[in-house]
Length: 347
Image 1 (cartoon, rainbow, N blue to C red):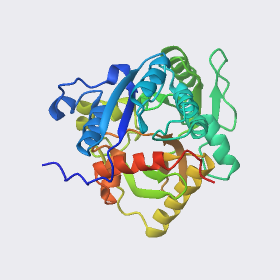
Image 2 (image 1 turned 45 degrees about the horizontal axis):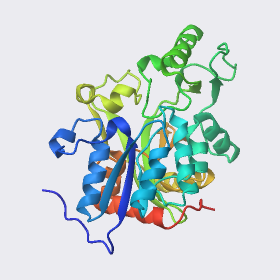
Image 3 (image 1 turned 90 degrees about the vertical axis):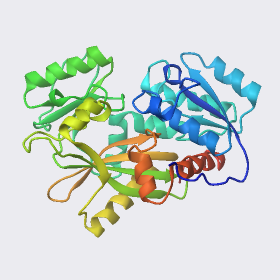
Image 4 (image 1 turned 30 degrees about the vertical axis):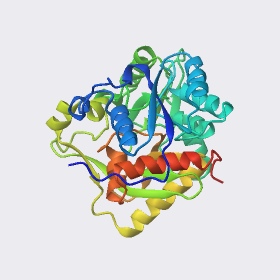
């Protein structure tokens, strides 16, 4: 049985922007959505309608014109931004948000500057390192450049796309222990993903996720942990693309995400304070998920900052919000309220 939907003060006209292939079918049911690629979009739109809002959906492809035309036609109170890229380019979503600002229309999620600073994994690490936030040592290999490993980067290393999200292209073979394997994996990122590569020192330890909500006043959600209950002890714990998206593989290796257990209270306090600092340093607004590695000796490393993370009901961000007492409906309403408060980045 679905949880009760809180009553809202006024009905809003909402324009939901989604990637064109992810517009849910009109007759889709919750059962249809369960394993569908458009589950997040379905969950958000169904819940907003159950909250009493008027929701219009626009599938966005490679043209900003339909956004302008739809905004002019329906005059939404707010845009619910569910885009993760534009024209299949991950970092172009910041330009869509800039366009919404030019249209003077409130939108959910992060502002353009926060997206620019966070989406590029090297840029965010440079900024955080400047502010003395601990990040793994790294190097960037641009497309067309030869792979030359700096001496300061000792194996094992992990190779990722510089800008793609959702663990795109990450596999067990992304963890490399020789220059030959490093060159092969960088070539894979360049050729198969079509992006520059970032090479990072692999940090062995517990993988923690922390959600943050807010513009100026921030609410840090409970610390969440990714665990592998059926993986051999010696196997590296990596959030690969299959771990993120392949439900059969998740069951096979026992992937679980839940409240992090057995963390000393001072450590939890430190992580939450660190989250606020990262969120403000990267000028994020709206909501974000921050990814960490916790080593055996208690060192906390920031892996990534993810503005506008996945919002599917029951997934990490929504589940941690529920742990903090925010139902899924209340979470979405809170995200809308933050959008209506204005777009100023936190100081």
